[in-house]
Image (cartoon, rainbow, N blue to C red; front, side, top):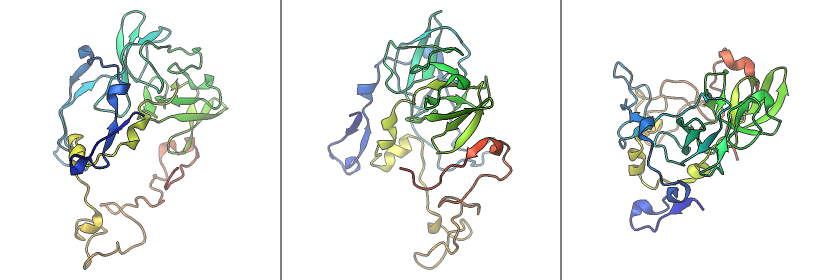
Length: 282
C-alpha cells in the first residue's frame, strides 16, 4: 500500500495520510541542468490584482523543465530515475536518450527504472510509447494528449488520469476524457500509452490546515458567511439560505450543482461528441 497513515501524536495527525514516496521513488537527486527558480505570483497579475483566488505563501520550490512536446522522434530512451515534482501531482522521470540527451517526462503507472520508451508514428502500442492517435486501437488508455499536432501534451497530465480511445472516424479520434466528455481530436495529434503515475495522490488526507498552507493554498471562505456586498449568497439574519435557486460565484455566474457553465459559442464546441456528465462521479 503506497498510502502512509500516522499514529495520532497530535490532533492534526488524526486521520492524516500521505503518499509513501520513499517506497515509490528511486531516491535520485534532481538533475540540476533541467531545474531553475520560479517566482511566485500569489495569484496576482501584472497590475497586482488577484486573478486566481486562494493562492499565496507555500514552501520554496524549484521548477523542473518537463518535455511535453516530445520532438525527439525515433530515438529510444531509458527511464533513469523516478522523482517527485513539487509543481505537479504526477511523478516525473529522467529520460536518457540513446544519443545521450536528457529530458524530464511525466511517467505512466507501473513504470520502473530501466524501462524504455519510443516516440515514433509506428511505435508499438506499449506502455510509455508515444505515437499518433490514428494508430491507437479502440480501448487504448492514453495520457499527455495533444489538442493540435506539435503543440505538446495538454490533456490527461495529472496523477492517475487517462483518456480512452472509443472510436476512429473520418481522420478524427474520439476520446473519453477524465471528465466523461467524449471529444474528437485530429488523428495526427500525439499521445502516450498508459495512465499517469501516482494514482493514490487523490486518496491523501491533509489532516490540518498547515499542510494546505505549505502547498501555497490559502483558506476558502463560504459565500454564505459574507455580506451581501461581497457575495450573492451573503447576508441575512443568522444562518440563512442563499435566497435564490441557482448557486452562484462571487461574480454572480452560475456554478456547481449540475449547472452548465460552458460558453454556448466556444470555438471547440464542434469537437464535443458527448457532453460531460456533471455531478458526483463514481
